Image (cartoon, rainbow, N blue to C red; front, side, top):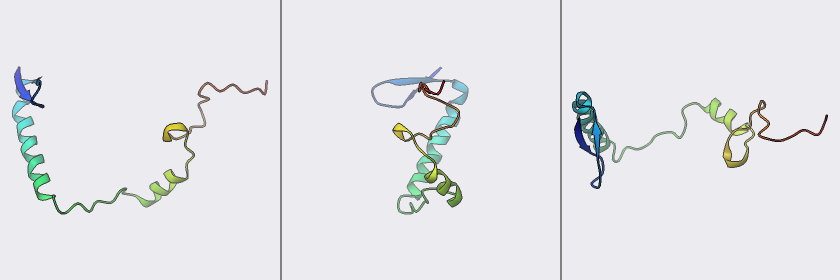
Length: 79
């Protein structure tokens, strides 16, 4: 096992066979972020129709979508 330093406080152990790929991915991520410093014009969502549908769906507490199949502990008094 090799040590990889994620934070200066505690090292993390990684698989030795994956170490070179981890370093390569870090370099690629650093290059990408350096090239995109000023050009950050990304849309907040990709598909307009999906966004509109999601905005119309009812939401429960915490912002989650309400599904029709679950009762979440609510008892119906219609018995």
